[in-house]
Length: 84
Image (cartoon, rainbow, N blue to C red):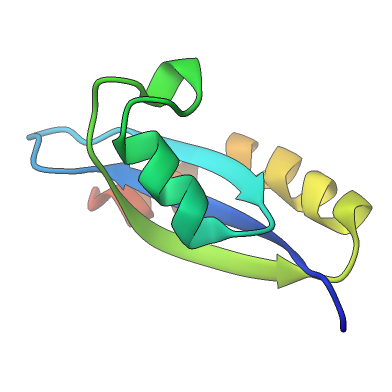
């Protein structure tokens, strides 16, 4: 059975100027639950998040490369956050 790695973008829920967060996981739904429970990454604690974007990769290396690029793609993250 093939195992995949996912890169995802979260958007902060119910705030006027939502933040975004880019991460990776092999189980996106479980990772989202972790972030929303306050046990996720330091920058996500104390906030509620919605999953707004996911990509699937066959290898960990491909996922890490894509995560690096998404973290620097301010235009895409602003669009996913609901900005112009």
